Length: 125
Length: 125
DNA sequence: GGAACCTTGACACGTCTCTGGTAAGGTTGG
DNA sequence: CCAACCTTACCAGAGACGTGTCAAGGTTCC
Image 1 (tube, rainbow over the protein chains, first blue to last red):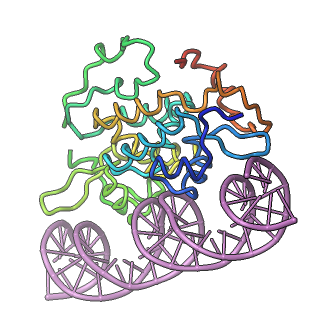
Image 2 (tube, chains in turn yellow, orange, cyan, purple; image 1 turned 135 degrees about the vertical axis):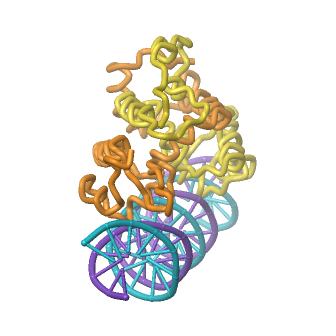
């Protein structure tokens, strides 16, 4: 039945994660494999790739699974994203070269940031 | 600006945080107050407001300081943001062809639908 | 039918987050 | 000068995160 779908142990070997962690990652909502009729996890090529890149991502930036999970939540929950964005935009006294308003512009669409160009950050204190 | 700047204890009282937490929040990079010549923390009106809204933000969405800190990091580190964004954009469990081995266990993903209908129509491949 | 898988659930341990303390020492202002 | 602030630094404890392991029970397949 399963064409190229791997079981959890096979997936573990090819991705570098442990079976335990694959279940944990699934629980955290980051990589959710399909299931066979009897409930076995089936990891397809997409999931496997995702698991490998996830590994790289975490190591490269020293992130935790919870960080990526939160980022995902940000991408899914517009209300949350808006609230966080709003809070962060009220940058108090941290003058970096940060473009306020643009940053969380993921979920691609276009690059029409009307407000970014208009409002100029205040003369910092 | 020495006029309306509060000390850490005063700020604690007006924001609801404890002095201890104000230092912790500063350490996490979320609200960094100015310092007096001798090193005393000086919270201005902007910081105080930020602290209050931070409180609301955390409670309203059940976030942790680390979550907001990570969001801030996302906003500042373009490379990180790009990497995370890229990872998230890769289709996670969007089964078009996965529907072959259909299983009944596909349950949650509830608010995904709700929010999809609410505000973020795009987000496709 | 039995070996070799898979599933969920639970115990466990180290580390981190979030808070609160306490201690040792500098600042401030009456 | 001294009380009342402030500072940093460390101990502590509940809870979450990241893993491993083990148990009891279904599936698969030869």
